[in-house]
Image 1 (cartoon, rainbow, N blue to C red):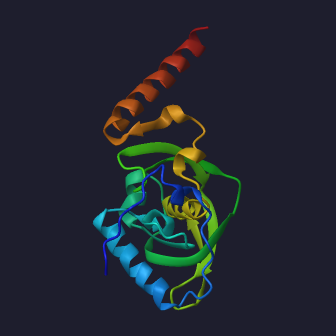
Image 2 (cartoon, rainbow, N blue to C red; image 1 turned 90 degrees about the vertical axis):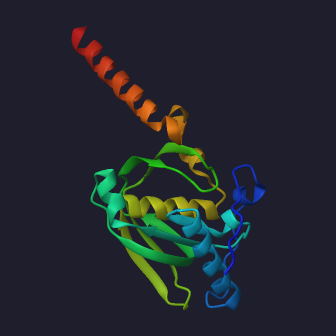
Length: 192
């Protein structure tokens, strides 16, 4: 296995639509997946798409740890490390939730991104078997984030309020400021 270099925002590979994989069971796909797993684990990420390692192929890996759902205060379904080839998803309803996202291709930054809360995703496992699964909350968020990479979309492009894009070390300050703004706005409304 090889540790791969991660493309950063601004590199054209992250803006292109990735190519579909003809044979999910090919040795090249298997090798790419092994290297992606090693790279993601080394970077302590929860997801990685092939374009992030300079491969314009429709391949993603992700996991949704139990503790992540607990940390976010939402019940989220669990997903072990999963590899999907030629993935796609569709929302199960129109409910969007705002959640904080980071990205290995945008190191040191976090943003508040609207995503569908419930989706069904489909694709192929490395052994060629078809995969179909429902996902909620963080699990759904990470799948949507990784599939976006296959379509040349980075999370800031999904944001509806760029004032909620911040450096990781400033997130706490931004949250305190935003909560203060909401409270003072609510106070003004009741005083008028």
